[in-house]
Length: 126
Length: 135
Image (tube, rainbow over all chains, first blue to last red; front, side, top):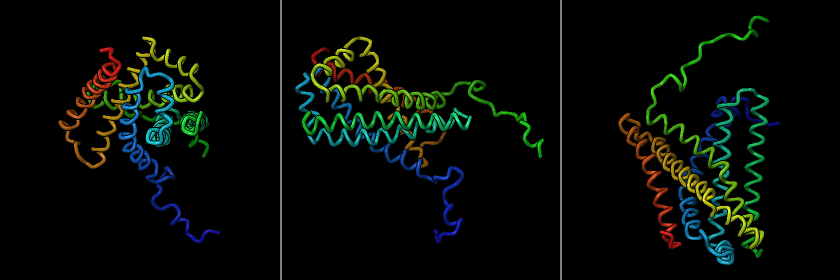
């Protein structure tokens, strides 16, 4: 039995029931992505057309793998929030909206886990 | 109370099609479009990373797809979408602080976003091709 009053529980949340959480996470990951994606562009530019052994050895380095892992998490959180807004704006039927949001989450988690797994496998010895 | 359930024909506010196109409006639409493209574009990064984790054969197959002219075109488009969304995002972060919201400033920032994204994309590819000795 929670001791907080109903008013205390909803204060600051507004009609979206989540307060400024969405807005803040979108901004937090946006700032992180500026740095992490600049890193990715540098990495891909230098690795474009490189031999497999070079790419494998580079991706296994901690100083490469760690920012890459951070980028995957930050980038996917950001894009999941973005796609959520797009779906909420254009899919009006409640049922279809819920299904679209679920599919988007499945996509993000599948892509995210696949990327994280690949980087970790390369790091810990593929 | 049953009448209240009848759908009411309410007037809708004017939408995109009745306005003259403004640069800020086009940049807003492009920001959303590039965001959506980047969302699905993560599949490219995922394919590259998974292929690298699978081994030399899979990696060479994926690399051959990216090296094909059509693959290069997709990657070029992906680079532009990334550059555009990033510059557009920086513009939004500036707006979040309450700055840059005068009409002339918003217009100038919109032009900077589109011209900057094209310049940035060309610069990234020029550096990339130069590193490989193809330019």
